[in-house]
Amino acid sequence: MSLPPCFADRREAGQYLGRRLAELGFARAAGGEPALVLALPRGGVPVASEVARAIGGTLDILLVRKIGAPGYPELALGAVVEGDASGRDPHTVVNDDPWARRAMESGAFDAERGRQLGEICRRQQHYRQGRPVAAMAGRCVIVVDDGVATGATMRVALGAVRMAGAAQVVAAVPVGSPEGLATLRDAADEVVCLNTPANFGAVGSFYLDFTQTSDDEAMALLREAGCASTQPRFAAWQRDDAPFRNGPAVR
Image (cartoon, rainbow, N blue to C red; front, side):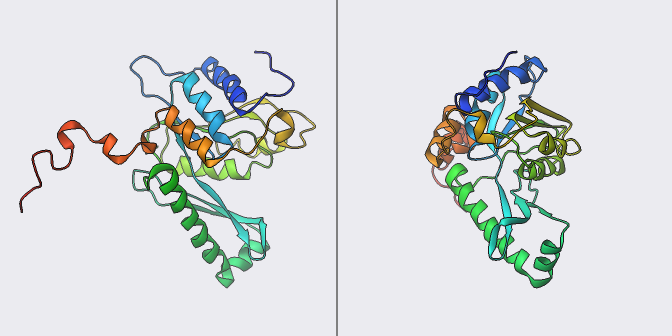
């Protein structure tokens, strides 16, 4: 499969990535369970929506938040990933470095983790009306982003998917740095990347349009894909399960 020098935008990148995953055998077989395609929001959503369409997968998002150092929010001390519908708790990763150890000893790490869990809850409400991500145990789970630079966020996400009991853990991106992709090899059963340039630079340099994906755009794509967790709760009720179908229960 020949690739353009640059992807027009994230959706085009997702179309190419979806074709590649289909070629590798990840397309849904007749009667088989579809792969769970988890986008890292927000930039991963347009890519993942096209991947899910190409392979007949189920689209959802996986919420990951960096835990920054006090006064230096861009300095990552670790990260936290939401739990899933099986009841698994959020998964926290702590970096093995002096900054993280000092933050753990002072309590600053736990305080920032609490703030980031609050942001995860806010985003769960926004994207899924408070529902957790779909249960992953026993499934093929493909984690998708618009690119990999250092690999830190993707690596944490893959670790959480593994801990949730996924049968197969796959990282899939349109473009990535050789160094960043190398850090994913132990976390995933398979790493799929279309373009691994020796002189990487930045993810955005491989897209003609790398405009930030908005919450509204991400939500629209999730609804367009029929993502069950974005539907109003009453839309998921079965006819026989609708509340008060025969009047309220008498106790």
